[in-house]
Image (tube, rainbow, N blue to C red; front, side, top):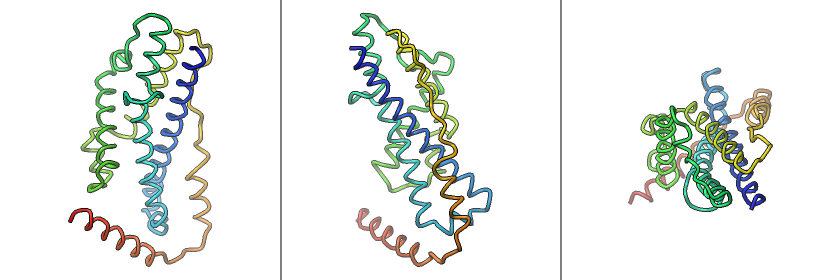
Length: 210
C-alpha cells in the first residue's frame, strides 16, 4: 500500500510541477509584452498567441484534475488511501488550510469556472475578463499550488514518508529562451499568416454558432 500511495503523491506532484511551469510561462509572456509594448508578441503573434493560450488552458486543466474527485491521481483519493491504510480520519484540503480556507475555496471554484469557460465552452476567450469573472489571479493560483504541496507533505507524514515534496525551479527554461532567440532574429512580415488564421477562426466560430 505504501508504494501505491507514494506513486499517487508523485503523480500529483508532477501535475503541479507542469501546471506551475505552464502558468509561469503564461505570466512571462504577459510581462514581456508589457516590457516592449508587445512588439515582439505582435511580430510573432501567429505562434506566441497560441502558446500563451495553450499555457493558460493546460495549467487550468491540469490543476482541475488534481482537485477533481474522479480518477486516481487527485488529492481526495490520496487522502482516502492513507485514511484506509492507517485506519484514521484526516481533514481535507480546505479544512487543513484553516485561516486561508475561504481564499482557497474561492480559487478552486475560480479554476473550475475557468476550465469550463475556456475548454468546455470557447465562445468567450478574453483572458482578462475571464479572470475577473473567476475572481482569481495568477498569485492566487500560485498560492493554491503551494497549499496543495504543503497538504501533500502533511498527508505523507502519516505514513512516515521522510522526503519533502517541493517544486523544481524551471525559471531559466522555456519561454525566456524562446524570446532570447526571437530578439536576435531578423523581423519578418507575418501579417498574411495572421490573416489566414483569423479568417479560419472566424469561419469556425460562425459555423459553431449557426
